[in-house]
Image (spheres, rainbow, N blue to C red):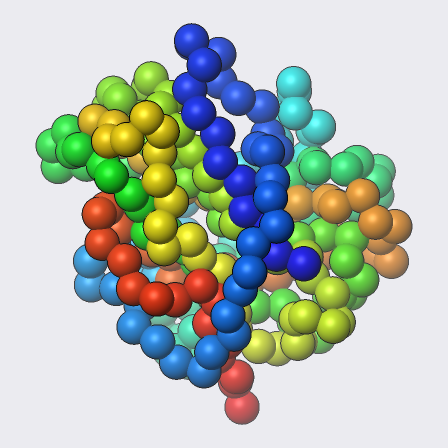
Length: 237
Protein backbone atom coordinates (compact mmCIF):
# COMPACT_ATOMS: atom_id res chain seq x y z
CA UNK A 1 0.00 0.00 0.00
CA UNK A 2 1.23 3.48 -0.81
CA UNK A 3 0.20 6.39 1.35
CA UNK A 4 0.56 10.14 1.09
CA UNK A 5 0.07 12.88 3.62
CA UNK A 6 -0.04 16.63 3.96
CA UNK A 7 0.09 19.03 6.88
CA UNK A 8 -0.59 22.73 7.24
CA UNK A 9 0.72 25.33 9.64
CA UNK A 10 -1.48 25.92 12.68
CA UNK A 11 -0.39 28.94 14.67
CA UNK A 12 3.19 28.22 15.84
CA UNK A 13 2.66 24.56 16.70
CA UNK A 14 4.71 22.11 14.62
CA UNK A 15 2.55 19.17 13.54
CA UNK A 16 3.51 15.82 15.00
CA UNK A 17 4.58 12.93 12.82
CA UNK A 18 3.11 10.96 11.23
CA UNK A 19 1.10 13.40 9.14
CA UNK A 20 -2.51 12.71 8.16
CA UNK A 21 -2.51 10.00 5.49
CA UNK A 22 -4.74 9.24 2.52
CA UNK A 23 -4.64 6.42 0.00
CA UNK A 24 -3.11 7.34 -3.36
CA UNK A 25 -2.96 5.60 -6.72
CA UNK A 26 0.49 4.80 -8.13
CA UNK A 27 2.00 3.91 -11.47
CA UNK A 28 4.89 1.48 -11.83
CA UNK A 29 7.00 2.17 -14.93
CA UNK A 30 10.38 1.14 -16.28
CA UNK A 31 11.91 4.53 -17.11
CA UNK A 32 11.04 8.20 -16.85
CA UNK A 33 12.79 11.60 -16.57
CA UNK A 34 13.96 12.39 -13.05
CA UNK A 35 14.62 16.16 -13.12
CA UNK A 36 17.91 15.37 -11.37
CA UNK A 37 19.65 18.39 -12.91
CA UNK A 38 17.01 20.67 -11.39
CA UNK A 39 16.89 19.27 -7.88
CA UNK A 40 17.61 21.71 -5.06
CA UNK A 41 18.70 19.00 -2.61
CA UNK A 42 22.42 19.17 -1.69
CA UNK A 43 24.24 15.89 -2.41
CA UNK A 44 21.00 14.45 -3.75
CA UNK A 45 22.75 11.36 -5.16
CA UNK A 46 24.95 10.66 -2.13
CA UNK A 47 28.07 11.20 -4.22
CA UNK A 48 30.97 9.78 -2.26
CA UNK A 49 29.69 10.62 1.23
CA UNK A 50 26.67 11.11 3.45
CA UNK A 51 27.36 14.81 4.15
CA UNK A 52 25.38 17.07 4.58
CA UNK A 53 22.71 14.48 5.45
CA UNK A 54 22.16 13.91 9.16
CA UNK A 55 20.62 11.03 11.11
CA UNK A 56 16.90 11.41 11.74
CA UNK A 57 14.78 9.60 14.32
CA UNK A 58 11.28 10.50 15.43
CA UNK A 59 11.15 12.04 18.89
CA UNK A 60 8.39 12.83 21.40
CA UNK A 61 5.63 13.88 21.12
CA UNK A 62 5.88 11.48 18.16
CA UNK A 63 6.63 7.80 18.89
CA UNK A 64 10.41 7.57 19.51
CA UNK A 65 12.38 5.85 16.76
CA UNK A 66 15.68 3.97 16.88
CA UNK A 67 18.11 2.41 14.45
CA UNK A 68 21.76 1.85 13.59
CA UNK A 69 23.55 5.05 12.56
CA UNK A 70 23.02 5.80 8.85
CA UNK A 71 26.12 5.27 6.68
CA UNK A 72 27.33 5.89 3.15
CA UNK A 73 28.01 2.77 1.05
CA UNK A 74 29.56 2.38 -2.41
CA UNK A 75 26.92 -0.19 -3.34
CA UNK A 76 24.18 -0.40 -4.22
CA UNK A 77 24.04 2.74 -6.37
CA UNK A 78 21.05 3.53 -8.57
CA UNK A 79 23.37 4.04 -11.56
CA UNK A 80 25.73 1.21 -10.64
CA UNK A 81 28.48 3.75 -9.94
CA UNK A 82 30.58 2.83 -6.85
CA UNK A 83 32.13 6.33 -6.86
CA UNK A 84 28.67 7.70 -6.07
CA UNK A 85 26.97 5.21 -3.74
CA UNK A 86 23.91 5.47 -1.52
CA UNK A 87 22.81 5.87 2.10
CA UNK A 88 22.11 2.80 4.21
CA UNK A 89 19.47 3.41 6.85
CA UNK A 90 18.08 1.10 9.53
CA UNK A 91 15.09 0.97 11.83
CA UNK A 92 15.06 -1.12 14.99
CA UNK A 93 11.83 -2.96 15.75
CA UNK A 94 13.14 -4.53 18.96
CA UNK A 95 10.40 -2.50 20.62
CA UNK A 96 7.50 -2.50 18.13
CA UNK A 97 6.12 1.07 18.10
CA UNK A 98 3.63 2.12 15.45
CA UNK A 99 4.80 5.23 13.53
CA UNK A 100 8.31 5.28 15.06
CA UNK A 101 10.75 6.37 12.35
CA UNK A 102 14.49 6.26 11.59
CA UNK A 103 16.52 7.49 8.61
CA UNK A 104 18.22 10.64 7.29
CA UNK A 105 17.27 14.25 6.71
CA UNK A 106 18.64 17.69 5.96
CA UNK A 107 17.58 21.34 5.94
CA UNK A 108 18.70 23.69 3.17
CA UNK A 109 18.06 27.30 2.22
CA UNK A 110 16.83 28.45 -1.17
CA UNK A 111 18.96 31.00 -3.03
CA UNK A 112 16.20 33.52 -2.27
CA UNK A 113 12.67 33.42 -0.82
CA UNK A 114 10.48 31.78 -3.47
CA UNK A 115 6.76 31.79 -4.16
CA UNK A 116 5.77 28.11 -4.19
CA UNK A 117 2.62 26.89 -5.94
CA UNK A 118 3.57 23.21 -5.80
CA UNK A 119 6.54 20.95 -5.10
CA UNK A 120 7.86 17.90 -6.98
CA UNK A 121 9.78 15.74 -4.51
CA UNK A 122 10.87 12.14 -4.12
CA UNK A 123 13.62 9.59 -3.57
CA UNK A 124 14.70 6.14 -4.71
CA UNK A 125 14.87 3.17 -2.33
CA UNK A 126 16.29 -0.35 -2.53
CA UNK A 127 15.40 -3.30 -0.30
CA UNK A 128 18.18 -5.92 -0.02
CA UNK A 129 17.12 -9.56 0.00
CA UNK A 130 17.91 -10.16 3.70
CA UNK A 131 15.46 -7.42 4.75
CA UNK A 132 12.07 -8.93 5.49
CA UNK A 133 9.28 -7.57 3.28
CA UNK A 134 6.55 -8.38 5.79
CA UNK A 135 4.66 -5.08 5.82
CA UNK A 136 5.91 -4.06 9.25
CA UNK A 137 7.85 -1.04 7.94
CA UNK A 138 7.39 1.44 5.13
CA UNK A 139 9.86 3.52 3.13
CA UNK A 140 8.91 7.19 3.39
CA UNK A 141 10.02 10.48 1.84
CA UNK A 142 8.87 13.69 3.49
CA UNK A 143 9.18 17.39 2.64
CA UNK A 144 8.54 20.46 4.81
CA UNK A 145 8.54 24.11 3.70
CA UNK A 146 9.54 27.03 5.94
CA UNK A 147 9.13 30.80 5.72
CA UNK A 148 12.55 31.55 7.22
CA UNK A 149 16.12 30.44 6.61
CA UNK A 150 17.40 27.45 8.56
CA UNK A 151 14.00 25.74 8.57
CA UNK A 152 12.28 28.25 10.82
CA UNK A 153 8.61 29.13 10.53
CA UNK A 154 6.82 25.96 9.42
CA UNK A 155 4.45 26.48 6.47
CA UNK A 156 3.34 23.09 5.13
CA UNK A 157 4.55 19.56 4.60
CA UNK A 158 3.69 16.24 3.03
CA UNK A 159 4.99 12.69 2.69
CA UNK A 160 4.78 9.63 0.49
CA UNK A 161 5.25 6.10 1.80
CA UNK A 162 5.36 2.54 0.50
CA UNK A 163 4.81 -0.44 2.80
CA UNK A 164 7.53 -3.02 2.22
CA UNK A 165 5.63 -6.19 1.38
CA UNK A 166 6.61 -9.07 -0.87
CA UNK A 167 3.51 -8.39 -2.96
CA UNK A 168 4.44 -4.84 -3.95
CA UNK A 169 8.22 -4.52 -3.51
CA UNK A 170 10.76 -6.92 -5.02
CA UNK A 171 14.11 -7.51 -3.35
CA UNK A 172 17.31 -6.05 -4.84
CA UNK A 173 15.36 -3.59 -6.97
CA UNK A 174 15.38 0.21 -7.08
CA UNK A 175 12.01 1.93 -6.72
CA UNK A 176 11.17 5.60 -6.88
CA UNK A 177 8.73 7.14 -4.44
CA UNK A 178 7.48 10.63 -5.31
CA UNK A 179 4.79 13.28 -5.23
CA UNK A 180 5.10 15.41 -8.37
CA UNK A 181 2.39 17.86 -7.34
CA UNK A 182 2.37 18.57 -3.61
CA UNK A 183 0.34 21.78 -3.15
CA UNK A 184 0.91 23.71 0.10
CA UNK A 185 -2.08 25.51 1.53
CA UNK A 186 -2.90 28.30 1.37
CA UNK A 187 -1.34 28.55 -2.10
CA UNK A 188 1.06 30.08 -2.92
CA UNK A 189 3.41 30.21 0.06
CA UNK A 190 6.61 32.24 0.26
CA UNK A 191 9.31 29.79 1.33
CA UNK A 192 12.95 30.44 2.17
CA UNK A 193 14.07 26.91 3.14
CA UNK A 194 13.03 23.28 3.09
CA UNK A 195 13.64 20.07 4.96
CA UNK A 196 13.67 16.69 3.23
CA UNK A 197 13.76 13.33 4.97
CA UNK A 198 14.05 9.72 3.89
CA UNK A 199 13.23 7.12 6.51
CA UNK A 200 11.68 3.84 7.54
CA UNK A 201 8.49 3.94 9.60
CA UNK A 202 6.92 1.16 11.65
CA UNK A 203 3.42 0.45 10.35
CA UNK A 204 2.02 -1.47 13.31
CA UNK A 205 2.16 -4.87 11.60
CA UNK A 206 4.06 -7.55 13.51
CA UNK A 207 7.80 -7.44 12.59
CA UNK A 208 9.61 -10.60 11.58
CA UNK A 209 13.06 -9.30 12.52
CA UNK A 210 14.48 -6.61 14.80
CA UNK A 211 16.60 -4.69 12.27
CA UNK A 212 15.42 -3.51 8.85
CA UNK A 213 18.08 -1.95 6.58
CA UNK A 214 17.41 -0.39 3.15
CA UNK A 215 19.32 1.95 0.81
CA UNK A 216 18.29 5.44 -0.34
CA UNK A 217 19.50 7.42 -3.36
CA UNK A 218 18.59 10.15 -5.88
CA UNK A 219 16.55 12.63 -3.89
CA UNK A 220 14.60 15.25 -5.83
CA UNK A 221 13.00 18.51 -4.74
CA UNK A 222 11.88 20.86 -7.52
CA UNK A 223 9.71 23.94 -7.10
CA UNK A 224 6.83 24.73 -9.48
CA UNK A 225 7.77 22.08 -12.07
CA UNK A 226 6.48 18.55 -12.59
CA UNK A 227 6.64 15.45 -14.79
CA UNK A 228 4.14 12.53 -14.92
CA UNK A 229 6.12 10.22 -12.64
CA UNK A 230 4.73 8.67 -9.45
CA UNK A 231 6.74 5.49 -8.84
CA UNK A 232 9.71 4.21 -10.83
CA UNK A 233 11.16 0.73 -10.78
CA UNK A 234 14.78 0.05 -11.74
CA UNK A 235 15.80 -3.62 -12.05
CA UNK A 236 19.45 -4.31 -11.18
CA UNK A 237 21.18 -7.24 -12.78
